[in-house]
Length: 108
Image (cartoon, rainbow, N blue to C red; front, side, top):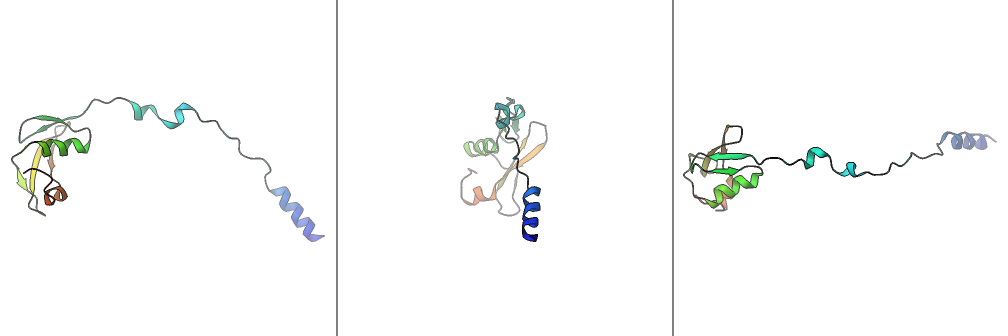
């Protein structure tokens, strides 16, 4: 009799209803802030004096890979060439990739 009482109280304490399922809408997958069109950011190379897009990190690599540049200084770790450019916020930035330099992927 005590087992029935325990089993009965256990069964009554467990919820028998499930959470309501909400239907997906077209706004669940994509938020407007992720699909807004942005103007590409433009950088200015201080070596060749050309402008290039810096919207993606690959844009910077392509600029220095496709054109021969005079380095501004050398990397302390691998002694590879480093290049300066001004980003879209007018801050001086440096481009260098030790891995690419050691594998002879960048023209220098």
